[in-house]
Image (cartoon, rainbow, N blue to C red):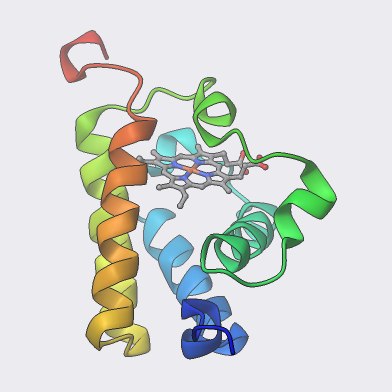
Length: 127
Ligand code: HEM
């Protein structure tokens, strides 16, 4: 008997909707828009793969792209504390919109706060 995975609890369909909703917000956010590509199709595809494995589902991201090395992959972009905050606010709004609730939402969000803060590679005044 294995524990119920957050991935199973959320389900692939809702996860996909969450990521699409999230990037529709990123695309409109004044602090995030400038560092993302105009076409977020591929970004969203990779994020679905990544979050699938982050939540305990199949290792889709690693199978196609290798080890995530997220911090390193974010190095080319200026990630300030304000941008981490903006990223998390888009995610929180997206979670509300797709109706992700309860412990599974709380746990995922709390992990994302840690991961987002870890991605910060530049202090605000250096922008
Ligand atoms: C890629 C920004 C946090 C996961 C990217 C890209 C940008 C970016 C600009 C490149 C998009 C592209 O070229 O397609 C940010 C900012 C963050 C943040 C501003 C704020 C802290 C996170 C977090 C996660 C994450 C918390 C994980 C939960 C990814 C993944 C990719 C990515 C999986 C694709 C990497 C690849 O190219 O294979 N991010 N990110 N990011 N980000 Fe973030």
